[in-house]
Length: 101
Image (tube, rainbow, N blue to C red):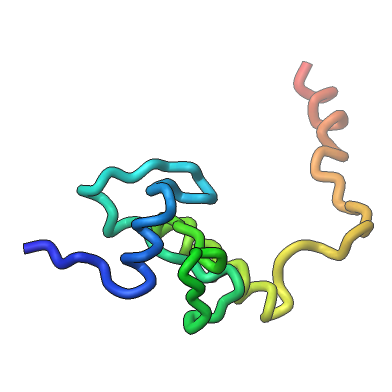
């Protein structure tokens, strides 16, 4: 027998559309277990009844969101803004192609 969601999850599923806010995938009632509640501010105790701190994410997008936050905390992620690329991956290609005629 399927257990109904409880607490803020139950409330979120009542007031928010059953769509992942990142990938826009829609979820029927039979697949709601794959739809999770993400707290926008990261505080799981901040649960306003209007749902303003929640967004529904599929399990894949939710995992990706938390991994992105952890990467940023660890100093990883995007390169420094404005840093020009220096690697020229195809620099020697012209010379290689000249010998193939």
